[in-house]
Amino acid sequence: MSRALYKILVDDLLRKITAGEIAVGERLPPEAEYAEQLGVSRSTLRQAFSQLEAGGIIKRRKRGGTEVISNKPVKSYNMVTNGFYDVLSVARDTLLIVTDIAEAASGTVAELEKLDTVTDQWLVCSGCRYMAGQAVPFAALEIYVPKHYSDIELQVGDTTASLLGKLEERYGVTAGRVKREISASLASEKVSEQLGLESGSAVLHLVTQITDANDELLEVAVSIIDPARFNVTTDVVVGG
Image 1: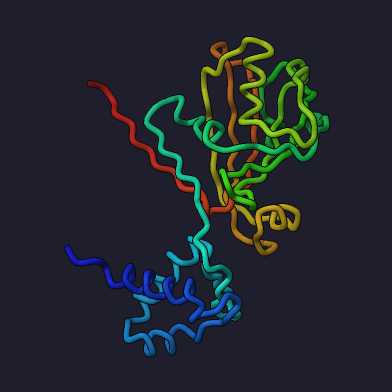
Image 2: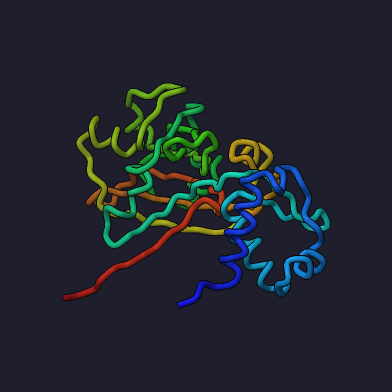
């Protein structure tokens, strides 16, 4: 089977960028003009641009054109889930670096206000999650742990897979249910700087609630994720 034309174009453009024929920082011609130069349709060029942008090679801006921003594709995290424990795989496969530790009350955090919990006070762990070998994080997090579970050894600058692992080790608890809600939002100036995005860029807003077998809340994690570097594939077999 022959390869799609846009994939061939992606490889050709990436080769030119890697070789320096197209320099990092260079602005590419307008789409209609560039498509004509390359001898392809505008839709083919747009498909190629979409893949290059997802790989962190180019950046398209409204009324600002298309700029080459890197000569190396940026890794993305691919979460494949086919069972309960795979849902927690992001903590297994990446690292969280703690940037701040504080306390908060339920009424001060939108994601906590409507939760039915036995506490109104929370330990708040802020941090960024990284893939191995990557200098720029793909997610910024605020993780909320009920105050009665806050006696865990954790300091600013620590690197850990997850807070859940520390709760399991310290208190002997076990996750029994994971509930996730995902939506789109715009990145704040702080998060944009952390993730290497422009202020106001579209991001994924992921809220994860982890409870034990008795449905008691163990953790609420609010993650702001660079959508170009995060993929989810679900493959669940029912019955059998």
